[in-house]
Length: 398
Image (cartoon, rainbow, N blue to C red; front, side, top):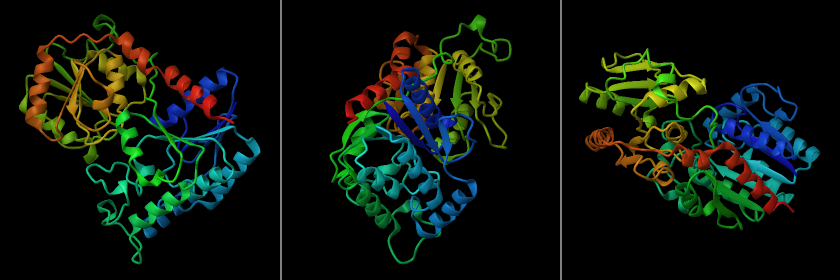
């Protein structure tokens, strides 16, 4: 098969690594794969093309803020991407995250539709079935028509129209009549949401769920005596681990971690990814963000449990990584995680209820939770994810 993938980034971040995993698996099975991406990095692999310049992406970002249309610009990058598609002649096109101001999404979708190319669209967030919200939270306008959007308040936008309404209908029009489309979501929760969006109303789109996969060579149980952190971290008390790409981001709920730590000096907390500068409680240890997956695995393994305080997650790689290392999870219900991670090893309470979070954390610490990591590994292996996508490609190609 000839498979072409498009994503904002390549080999970095969660979606960039997913694209790389799918590519490696398909290539090892004899497929020809081409990857187009937009931001960061350089062309360092023969089958990978960076279509956008950072200069054009910055212009795109400025125009987006002025007009309220995030996906309308980057004509040079869009032309380059379409030329690459025409030259490669893929049997399957797989779209991932198209945000990041690197391509005209409307023109790309209309092109794929006009050529009747079997297309897979993976939803890693809610951007593509709304007017551009990464997370819609409790707003349900997107089911019929986004308008008067709170998300765009406070930013420079067009004065002559309702930006959200215009962007929504522009996306809907792009998809109208796209019958060779499969919409994949990373959790059943997100799949059920996408089905409700009128953006896909006039398509024959098929909706399925394919959960993300992990690098299980890195994330696996490590016995305490073999853990390099054993002599550097006090494990005489319960250890609560919190992993985040951005502690200060309000949607990640870092403030609740600090509140829980202040309430419970008998617990030790470790924050991986702390980028604040305030004074932390004495029972909180912070380390900078690390790209070293093996080191991160050591933290998961030495922890008594992992904490999730996000307001919204469509899947949560943190939860999957923690369970793969044999460490249970407690946290706020955030959408995707509670539909993916079910069982006595994962407990979720209402968002923002610190009393309930404290209670469930204490309950989890007093129980002896056994996690069969072999079952977790079978479910969340990167090869399983890639193999499922490859089977899908074979089903839908002409």
